[in-house]
Length: 327
Ligand SMILES: *[C@@H]1O[C@H](CO)[C@@H](O)[C@H](O)[C@H]1NC(C)=O
Image (cartoon, rainbow, N blue to C red):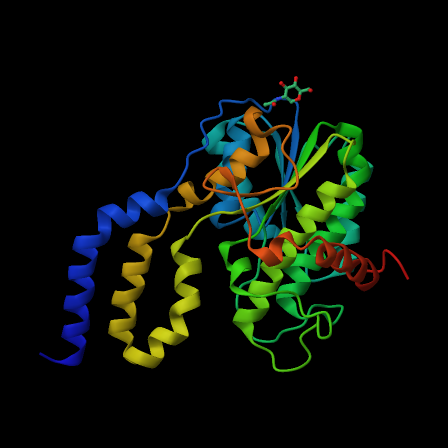
């Protein structure tokens, strides 16, 4: 047998044996809440695709006014059209938001603050993953800049509206990947030296956990709740992390494709991947819960670095300076 067919045989065999137990494990929790969202407003970043779009559809189904905050207005409008026709909810709108531009974040927040009388749920969903060392418009390393700093500024600029609407919720998507790093490197937060795209992704996801936690602390008594979460192992995420590694050991396109199928099959569907976000956004069960990290629709302990309150406070301070909220 050639190398390729051996790999194919192993993958097929492994799929057959592992499919049921692995899928049962990856499928995870389901949001059982029947809560309606009529009269409530929800903003979702990166809502034109993936679990963001599934989440937006769910919110629309529950009767919410849903604002899709996306970089591409064209793609967002397409998603909005689809959601309107699937749910019968006409109250689905799109606004331009490029998290890689502080100017765009400020413009978006102004549009919302000027026009929207309330904001019940802000879902910080958009994310960039393991990209090369790109920079945002403002010169921030892309993953830290978009995943953390863009959402940091956005949330801060919408806080008054969230407080006015309280009880309200901020839901920040992190990832299990936050636990693959030992901490934020405050000496090289913008990754000027030795850029490692995986490590940078892990740190940006850790920043999401720390931000959400510090936000909860700062919002004590305001009625605004803040939680972060791991959406689950979704094939795209799992696979993108392994891609280079797989290429190195396997080499060929075909084998690569077979292994991609394997990851696709074993990971969560988008529908399953949106459940924890939906839970944190709507469920009555968690309406008073704040400062926690969720996985499979229940609170779970983050990594030790994710519970470092000193680092969380320091990150907040550094972030405020970076986005120009404080000089
Ligand atoms: C949340 O707090 C409110 C007000 O104190 C209370 O009425 C409600 O039962 C609480 N909900 C849960 C799920 O603990």
